Image (cartoon, rainbow, N blue to C red; front, top):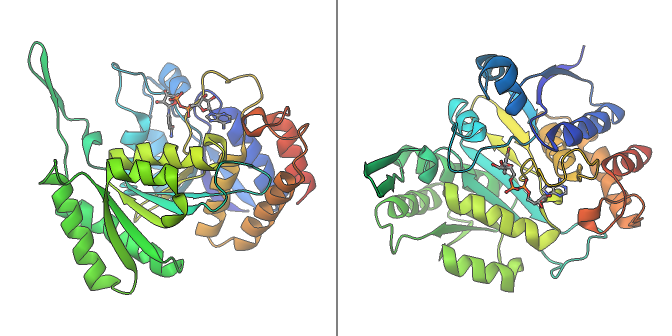
Length: 335
Ligand code: NAD
């Protein structure tokens, strides 16, 4: 009996891309037993909650999950499932590696960076108030504990993965207390834990400009919650879009692996979503749980399919005219 892992298909293109990832993992011999867990719109209809307690329990128990995107209503309705999940399971570190892939031509050919995003605090604390009609506030929360643990995570990651540099992204010139605290914690962790790693600080607006001018100057980008969210999509755009950037949400007790992209309602149900981002996220999961041979096999297979660049196989977002299925099957054939 294989290791048990939770599977949250999610909304929109979620079920399409997660089932592709599952097929690839099975074909690569990952030997996993999937525990399917409801989350998102379907869960709300069936269980009266977009994030049912049983789903949280299952992830707590089995510790690892592969998750499709879930839809969050804009400007009204329930708190984001993602925010709730990350907070409830204390998945404080989002890790999003962004790099050029073979065969995907973009304006840049030397992108090799990792966004490390704080996942539990900042403006995503969801503390919003109407002070008086016409006046509302949103509270940005930073704690010394939260800022220190994400800084430690980033520097430890840098040491383990033999990376060269950590850049802290901030707006401490305006948000002197919150971003100031984040910055002080990062400085302290750098000095105490990893003085050998190069460290610098960059204001968020300047960071955006520098990223589109020359992304090769960046290595690890350490961000608070909102900046990390925005920067992740910007970086995805540098290497071919949201269809090719994976992610992991990591905490002390477990980890949830998911692509950076959302439920893509514009293409849901059409069979043309790119499954690569979630497949790459499953590769991160295999590495995380020590199944590096499976991870290497899948990685080599998708690199080969991309390098071949057959437009009949690749999905439209990366210049092909293929489908989720054609890409998945070509990948499996290469395993
Ligand atoms: P999105 O990432 O869903 O889509 C943005 C654009 O990228 C769309 O044009 C979409 O078609 C394209 N795209 C995204 N993933 C793709 C893929 N795998 N293959 C091909 N094209 C792809 O962002 P959005 O439209 O702003 O958000 C839609 C919904 O997803 C919202 O409800 C949002 O809250 C939610 N969302 C969820 C997550 C998550 O669950 N982790 C993350 C981001 C957004």
